[in-house]
Amino acid sequence: MSETMFDQMAEAARSRGPEAALDLLAERLREEKKFPHLFEARLMKKRWQLGLPLIQAESLGELPAEQRRAYEDAYIDAAHEVGGLFLAEGDIARAWPYFRAIGETAPVAAAIDKFEPGEGIDQIIEIAFHERANPRKGFELILANYGTCSAITTFEQYPARDGREDCVRLLVRRLHGDVTESLRHAIASREGTVPETRHVPSLVAGRDWLFEDNNYHVDTSHLAAVIRFSMELEDRETLGLAVELTEYGRRLSPLFHYKGQPPFEDIYVDYGVYLRALCGDEVDAAVTHFRQKASAANPDETGSGPAQVLVGLLARLGRLNEAIDASLDHLRQVETSQLTCPSVAQLCEMAHDYGRLEKIAREHGDMLHFAAAVSEQSRR
Image (cartoon, rainbow, N blue to C red; front, side, top):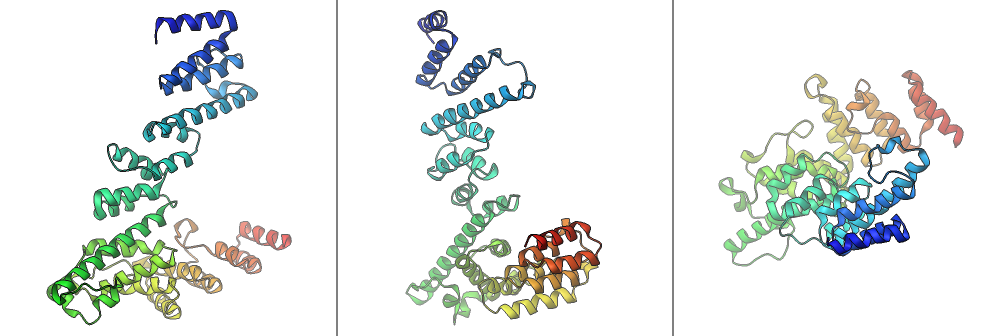
């Protein structure tokens, strides 16, 4: 900043007051794109207006409530301004700390949606996926730039619920595309023409030779992992693609039939049953399949996993009374914190069956849920 600018600020402060000098400073900082300094200048002006020292020495919590609220509002406004200026420059990485500080992800998420891979992609992936500004786009970038193996590994380390289904959808569609293209290429090499269909069962029907000599067409560890993740899907179309992957897996040599955790010991068969039920196919058979597994399981050996899968499946199918019965039969001794399926109380809430919740709570000496049940019945 030139000596002239210093002189102009000094003159403005003397003739028109400190706010004029700070406005002049902000204008110059904006012109010179010194946006972090602009942020500080905006806060400095608010501190002057509030009668506070311009150089911050105290913590925000030490301010009186009225001053603190006004300062917080100014902080939010300055963060919006400076973050927006960085986004206008295409600098997502430097915009993010300002929006993150005020708990707003939407502007950065929108900018990431328009991001074209290039220099700085790792920073964008970190912000989008790991810091959850835009998990779907972040995972898309991982999948496109680092491949399926890296995407699967990264997904397994992602703890949040938000954005998980988007990631699974991308994985299923990517792997399904890989399987179908590989199958079509193999068929064209053998038969001379490329099949038009991308429906896996149609591609493999009558072509046992595709699987001879332990042959496979996609990394089978990727296949097993993506099928396992597919339980999280709600989207019917993508669930259908996941079912096709299980049907492909069933045709593979036993060498590639990895043993899963109960009740999914045979991953291609058991997940296939589960996923088809979510698609609305062979629902009663699926319930019977997992009910038998839950009944036959020894909790000392398998834990409560088989029973939780049964309860979760019944809940997703909307068979809530059956889910409550199954939970009472198999999960009475399991702490709510250990459940991955809805608890009895949650199932009663989902069914709006507060009379049953009242009865169950009384039987179990559960005063908390008893109070909830009688209160809800009173309200209704």
